Image (cartoon, rainbow, N blue to C red; front, side, top):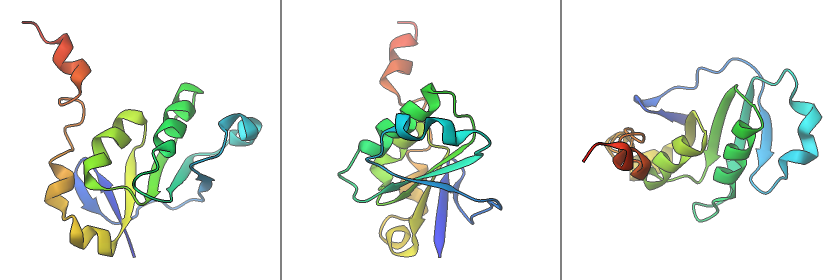
Length: 125
């Protein structure tokens, strides 16, 4: 069973529709016309050291995708803020990862906007 991580912590999968599944190494221009009417995209992360999914998410958002965007697979708690900053709405992990990295570790990174270096630069001195 999968666990969904959001800024609020762990929760069940509430998505009722279909997913448009993508590998992290796909070129978004290859499926440009196929996203019309797509409301949810899930990007697979084959390993925590593979950051191509973050780039893909940012490119999808810049291209105008406004639907639900989920990172799925080998994403660790330390990468949660990067996932949110790059455009993901949520992360899907398995129960074994949730046991190794409990909810408190993910929630510690939930203030991804406040801990962004750009936010610190915008604060008055």
